[in-house]
Image 1 (cartoon, one colour):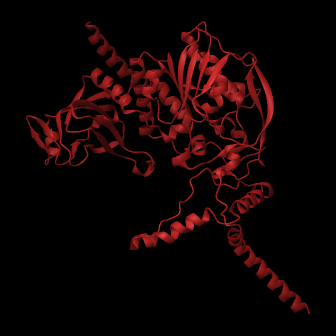
Image 2 (spheres, rainbow, N blue to C red):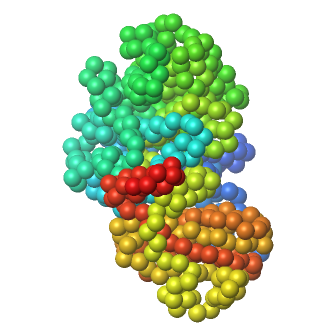
Image 3 (cartoon, rainbow, N blue to C red):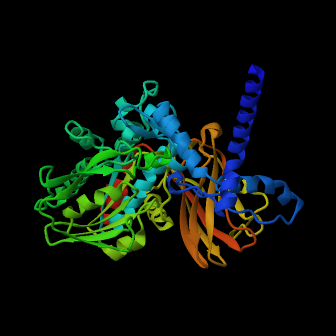
Length: 538
């Protein structure tokens, strides 16, 4: 009798197991739809694969179909949500490898390094920024300052500290600083010593506000309204140094309304939007004065705002996602301000169109490791300025070393013809370590195209896969001058200038000039250059 009961229990267990295996498929067939991955996963779904047309494609097709089906099988979201509930509420764990669960409801982004940056590594200092990363940022900021200065526009660059930098006491106990400096500390220390102007680090203002108010969202990667207000006051304090009659509403000039916040991006990543939430305070000005115009019908749309106060400046704010939360607050501080969400540095067309007094660029801390592309026009402006200021010539197109390194390239009175090779190699110079080498080229092209400079680096093992060892310049048909910098102090081997294959390209002249990486030497060089432009003698 006992064995019969055991046998029935075994059969029931097997049937339940089989039912669990086939139930998602039965639900999908019965309802005629798939339960596709939703917005909270914040990723692109695998596409439906097309029928293969080759043997190699047939080899890849099963894996592609499996990826498509895995994103859409029946009951998918219900099972994911159940799994998330069990891990988060039952075992106190994070259901997502992208999210770290801290104490008291705090969530932190771990992320995917080449997409999200690496906030925890940056906080711990386990992977210091490379000399290239620091120099790339330095010269990008200098390039943007130079170009904006040419437009008679002031420039302010600001960094928003990441959540681990301010609320590390809510991280799990095993996540603690390891290196001497966090990425933000390393970045700020380097820029303080090397830039010709100062970067605004919002860590201090947010820490000061944090003594009495929480400045970050627990379930999100962004600051809350108190953090954004601290940032807005710090930004306007810096800008208003040139506008002494301008004023911005202080901390006590805002109304507060509590609300339940269920849309945290980290809550979505753990698959529990609505179940994992927090109570936030929305700040609105007691005496609102800004007129806001959205530029399209979307909650994340860029906006323009105006205030009837001639003492306030005009501005453009280039920002990442942190700017979305400072918009309702910062609009009160400018006669006219245009917000532009972008990860591509300053946009030259928008600056010309807007004619601002000041261009602000504000980015989150995790952007530091990711780096940032910016317009080639701006790069050229900065590098041409540095090239013109330097009289330290390291190499010219007449040097024998250049000819010896390029035996297949045609050197004649007309210049250097690279039409056959599509490439010209520049010999490695010991000065690369201590100087920024700017390659000035006068080139003749038969069409619109581009030119690129490539290099190798000493530390291939630590080079980020998403970072390109390349700088580019655009060419038009005809004769023009372009300027390409060797950014990496750890460059090894010959540097390559590459052109698209099969095009007629003639380098009419080439010169490499050196700019000291030591800022004190740059100051002296720049002073001599400016005296020469003024027609005065030393």
